[in-house]
Image (cartoon, rainbow, N blue to C red):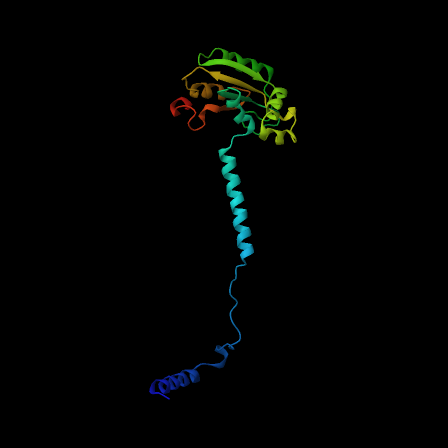
Length: 192
């Protein structure tokens, strides 16, 4: 044996006699380590990816009805209140005939509005069925589930901001969608 081995053996004997037997664990006993099963990690990553992807899709994708505005040459859609609507402006009630007349009258007086088309529930449902995404929705929805609206075409180069602010506060109006506000559709100052 070498001098180093002798010194090491003496040191270990000295330390070994000072340690109480209860403080020592048997050599075969090991602490349980946290193990990751690859299947669980892959599953969690897949679920997280789907949740994030669905969230991004929902935030960026308009509904088929909203997206259909540009397809039909519509610049702005004024959606009306429907019975049971969760919109606080509607209080769960449909727009009344008097409110519809007032909204239409106001819109006809606006110089920035070139044309106005009223779209009832039946026509909205037919338009929904005409789109690829809408065909799937049409399997679970019916005409009574659709929202009536005024579909507006604006004069070239005008902003819809003032129109949206004024009409958006009228009784019977649920919300207003400017279909031109898609990125790159029109200059941002016109979108408002």
